[in-house]
Amino acid sequence: MSSTSPIDFVNFDFTCTTMEACFNAFDKNCDGYLDIDEFRILCQALFRNNKGQTYETPEEHLRDIFQIFDLNHDGQIDKEEFTYCWNNWIKTIVRPISAILIIDVQNDFICGTLDIRKCPAKHNGEDILQPINNLLEKIDFDAVFYSFDWHPMDHVSFLDNINLRKLHESSPITVDNVQLYDTVIFDGDPPMKQRMWPRHCVQNTWGSELHKDLKVVENAVKIYKGTNPEVDSYSAFWDNSKLTDTKLDAQLKLRNITDVYICGVAYDVCVGATAVDAISSGFRTILLDDCSRGVDLQDIERTKNHVVKNHGIVVVSDRVKNMVEGNDRRPELGYKLALNLKEKQESTS
Ligand code: VGL
Ligand code: ZN
Image 1 (cartoon, rainbow, N blue to C red):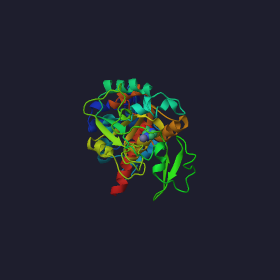
Image 2: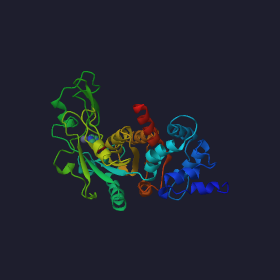
Image 3: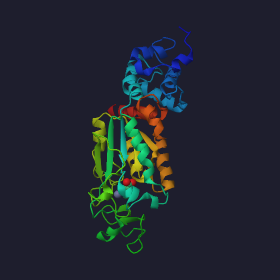
Image 4: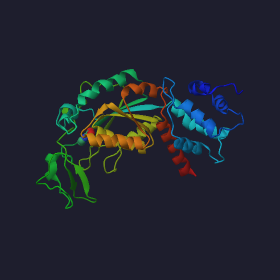
């Protein structure tokens, strides 16, 4: 029995095995339990890329994950605990259910009134069309969503509407000196911070249409946001005051989506806000760096840092196919899923 070398474990094929066979393969000493050392080897086999190279899982994360599946805290994972681990964790890691969220790839942000080429980062929104189309052509996502910034004429974010509402006395900027991209505070209960943008993405205008060169797939779901004149909405999940949700979360959960790939414009505004909400809704979140363009370089960096700090990842789009197919399995996303399960355990105990 001891003739099996460690390399055989690393090459273990999770995609066509049974739970029993998997447990027995990693229960090296055949005592009916997985201890931490056996579980570490399982993780080395689980978290690897399509070329068979293992990703290093930090020891601290490994121990956290082990504890999450060691439900009775006896320092080992028995067969019953492994059943839970298999059904709720390994299966998802090997066969994720993936959605892509294409955020606000609309004329106004690319070649219209809020053309991001005029913003500090000097990005060109056209750069993302080809890589996004390529993904849609090559990869069979379980669901595709397009969001639309979809404002009424009297929207609170338009600089030329500044006189429609009263500013709060605490606003650092007044009506007389307000400029594009400034953040003001509107009067209200509570007072509301708002960045001022040029008029953009007005409902049913050319500016709010998707860019003509963006591929639109069949059976995609369209999400409209920013429709309330009084509140802005950067995230495709929620408006900025978290008053109303767009039903995106429910639509994703209805389809049992586990992994959410996010791209579009603006990286540091609507893409970033959507990623923050995707993570807090419990989705394994992947930002597509080359499929996103933004307003401000420092804010883009902050967006990426937030995602990474919260166990999401930032990748370039040529890595996506193998990830969607379960052949490139990232420990960060595995850790995030385990943390979600821990949260569920704590809320039901
Ligand atoms: C956006 C600014 C204002 C975006 C929307 O889609 O990122 N940015 N409204
Ligand atoms: Zn907007």
